[in-house]
Amino acid sequence: MVITINTQLSLTFVLTILWANIADAQVQLINKDASALDVSISTVYADNLNPTLVKDQNAIGVIFAPKGQLLAEGHASQFLVDYSASFERYKLRKDDVMLKSSEDFNDYRVKLLSRVFLAKAWHFDTQVQYLNQQQKFGTGISQLRINVLQSDQLKQLSGAVSLVYGSDTSSRFISLKIHGNEDSYQENNDYSDLFNTSNRGAELNVVYRQSAATSFLLRMSGQHEDYESDLREDSDVYRAMLGLGWRPSGKSILEVLVGRFWRESDSSSNDGLSWSINYSLEPTENWKVALNSARYSDVSQSEFTTDSVIQDVHFNAQYNYSDQWRFGLAMHFENTEFNFASNTTELDEKSASAYVSLILKENRQIKLSAGKIDKFSSDNLIDYSQLEARLTWQLEF
Image (cartoon, helix red, strand yellow):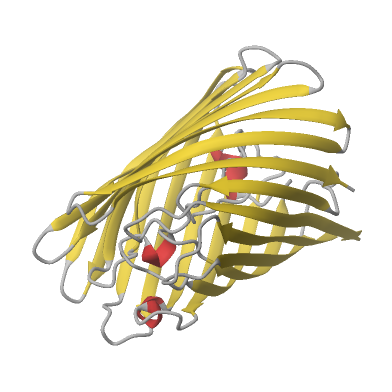
């Protein structure tokens, strides 16, 4: 699989083990053994489908989610097509004259990656991605709102070019990336067009392995965020971090980057501590454990401020009881500060989930998962919980 980072928070309880180190997360990996088509079909119970409303909405749903990768190789070149989609339909268990009896949430994404090997240690990547995402209630740009009756739909076109030097990017490399994206929201709500943005930026990453156990890390980035609406302030954000990577054995990895971020707009500025910490451990061949934490400044999900500071912690564990049975646990804690002109509002999110998976054959499995999310804001506007349970059939072709 190709490792990606998804910044959209949603109530998904299929555990992902964050086992890649910082170097792998910054250089696009191509897995020649990835499946061309992987299909998941789920039945879902959600106890609170639209948490922005005062009363809970119990619902039962069905999810169809295909994904896959297609790879073509030529002389000193590779071309990858990476795609995924999710089609979800929920039916309310009790009819309400004020609400629709069913809700659909449909997403799809297509990414094209071209890699050209310029020399033994040099390669050049060009990638383009299109994302169409129907955001669930209480996520994305509706996470600070109440009484939202129409879900928000994001259309994002992004692209990047990267120049990478390093014959072994797991130990030593230098990469320079120039990237950009255009985010536009369908005008489903009166606030939707306030979040249309055009972002441009660059990022430099350096990993130098000093010995078999230690590496030196450097990450620097800058981005200009341009809002389409004249009611929003544009801003520039910069981030610089230095760190160390430590591999005391083949069973554990610790990588720590620490630095600062700076955000500048016409009327305000903000700076603060920034970090990225990743720890992974395989105490036995059956256990995998990962702990990740980060602090950074991100595009604000409130139209009243350009600045939001996020700090989060992820914990994942997986236990392979046998060749057929697997168990997993995930926990996530996140705090977001929205810095307004007169005050600061904080949004806290806590989630936990677990699953048990039965592998029937090499390419088939059944997974039962359940989880809970709690959200609370310091101004008491947001205060709710969501429970969800899924039974998933997964088939790989």
